[in-house]
Image (cartoon, rainbow, N blue to C red; front, side, top):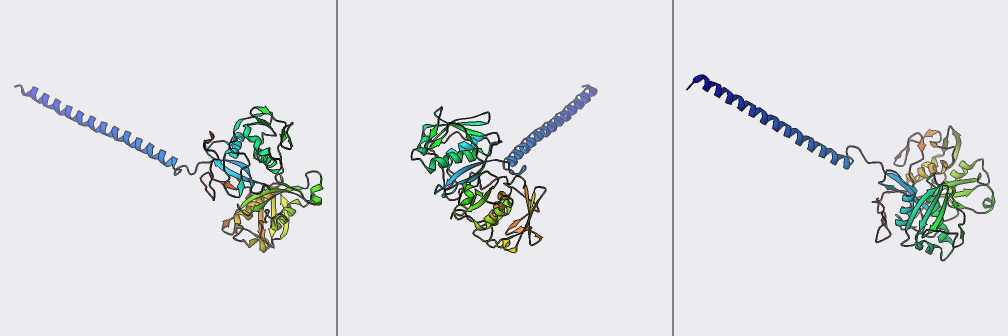
Amino acid sequence: MNCSLFLQDRLFLQRMKKVKTSLKKKLNWNNFKIISLTLLSFGLLILNNCNILSGPQAREKVIVYFSDENLMFLVPVTYEIKEKTSTPKKAIELLVSLEPPDKSLYNLFPGETALLNFEIKDGIAFLNFSQKFRKAFEAGGTEGNLLISSINYTLSHFKEIKAIKFLIEGKEIETLGELDLKEPLAIDRWKNLFLTGREGRIPGEENRATIYFLEHKSLFIVPVTCVFQDSETLPQNVIHRLTKGLDEEWAKPTLPAGTEVLSFRVEDNVAYIDFNSAFLNVKNKVPPEIVINSLIFSLTEFNYIKKLHITIEGKDLKKYGSMNLPSMLARPEAINIIKLNDTRETGVNFRFTQRPGICL
């Protein structure tokens, strides 16, 4: 046997073995990388879906209006939805289909009412309801009027809508109960207009102000439009009313008893309010969040007030009850907010056995 040939064959086999080992290592490494990247991607997906990496996903908010159980006023309730944008149609679908979040509130739509179509033309919202919609107006009076107002108030949060036209089964309607609806119904800025005595006869709107009182059964704050004789001190009058409430039992004051305004001024769209120490007397019946929010919502209804700065006898208010307060208080994004998994006392449920096609 030729030794040189034997050595060459042996060297060749050794080289081949090394190549084989190298390839095996590379393949194992590549497989390891592929598996690792796959597991990493899967893990990141889980973390993102659980809001661990990105944090809670932003949810759009929709405000709808339910009646109180005595058909006296309308209460705004804010729902969070999963859609990227809230639409007027979505708001009306929710208003029609959801049970109110508290047993003291009432959905005015007759059972099985359906929104058949919704479109906007030249600033007018055309709402086409099923025949069941008429049932709310059969007895006449308050319930039908409140139902129309609940739709009006709900759509008032969409700037593109200036008026509303109602249809039933595709046909425009001219009257519902005692309501004349021949012309499109203008969006109403003033919610729960409360007229009493001489103030109720004051013409124009310059003496009006919207005040957010406490509805004590649901612990929601409710916008009520009041009319005052003196238009020059409207913000101060609003604060005074928040300490006194209205004569009506349902409109409870939100500010602590004995609260007085020591000074008030507006500079650069900021209202600077100095209260006496009675403002600090937070009671369990009215949570501190209600006190602060009712004050912010009420005063920022004036278009020249965007933020509030509160002091107590000259000292900055940094903590109120359990709340830490910033120096400047801005209007919250939502009022009476309810998450759709919040059951409260009655739960948030659809009103129909067959649910409308709403993605919540």
